[in-house]
Image (tube, rainbow, N blue to C red):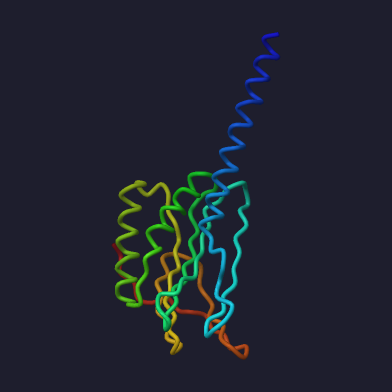
Length: 168
């Protein structure tokens, strides 16, 4: 009888954890853009599939003004609820954007200092954030993310070289 009670309690706890993970995944998925630009001078596509129930990947494409779009790709270290929570924090920090490249770089530097202060360096994220103007000008900050590629109309492409960086 005691063994059955213990097994029932384990099953109940397992269901509670599964429900919490389902809710966390739902919140994480709600952070991803529901609509990406499919008309006009900028077309974008993207998807994110977590390797577990919840992950720490995040991306967004946002219109800053009629002549400028912002795009961000984030990969938080680790998986699970902690990574999803950090991705959520980053989404909030990167939501308000600018069309000024120098402000973008300063924002990423401040975000870096904030994360180090809050996590003690135990959790981290790689971030690629860019501004694309209607005139074709691209400004970006690559904070330890894998190298980016630029694909243009008519099959043109090139690898983006890292911009000069400052260590904080």
